[in-house]
Length: 360
Image (cartoon, rainbow, N blue to C red; front, side, top):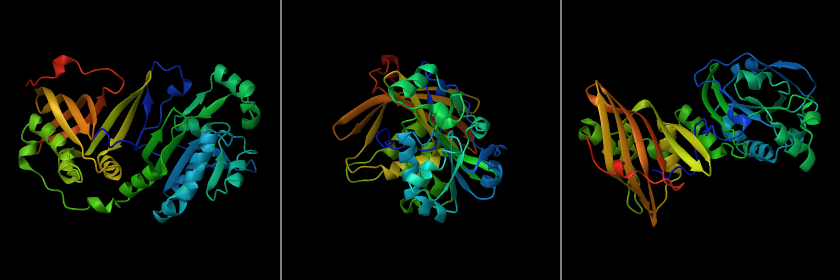
């Protein structure tokens, strides 16, 4: 399960509060929220009501930093490559940047983009979506002096405001999905975006259309439930995991997350149940994957249970240790997983010995 998350959905990414990054100080609009009222600008400087545009048709709404950003250029080019597939699913693409409207069309012309690009140089829309931040002076001076780039001239103001690179999927006037990443070098992969759209449109991967089958013994107790998770994701070489069984263990709206660590930064990657399964199928390998519990610590009260499960995961010659944490609920005469979050020892923090033992 851990190796399968090479590419990541759905989600929203949050970083450690220890990171000295003003882009961390944002509060993105929650999923399921109504589309906020906001304005952007056409290349002629005319005010455009953004909510009217995105409410008129299912929309992929992209916030990017500007046409000067190489990562933004690559992201928009990748979107152009899958535009036909997005259109076939019934969606339009709308892209917004902090560029002044006199500069906003340059990237569209250079990259031959065939979707709409607007200017949000006043950050009206970015603020309504909760993703606008002020660039710190150190970074501003670095851009201006070392990189010979003046954000004030490009953006047409001296506020030094930028949006955190984000993707919002909008349909029927509501936000269905969001990907917000303060680490501007990391963008939502186009294949992941398509998988999310397919999931939302009930056009899931053909390899996962079989009828789900419940194993009754899996849901009789918290320990049986979390044990079934490890059994279902494990498979020998040249075999596939039992994703049908895996799905029966979770509430339909369960959230699955992984906390990844790199240097002093922590990133929480969030998935819906279906997007996690789709991503896992997409990134499965032929080398086999086995995950074993090395201890379950279970606390239970009045239909609720929390499980702290230490594990060892094996893929080929690679071994990873870590902890899975589960929130469980008992309803309809069975146990369900409401959420699953895990992390590993890849950053050198080993699992404490007290968790590598079974307790009830």
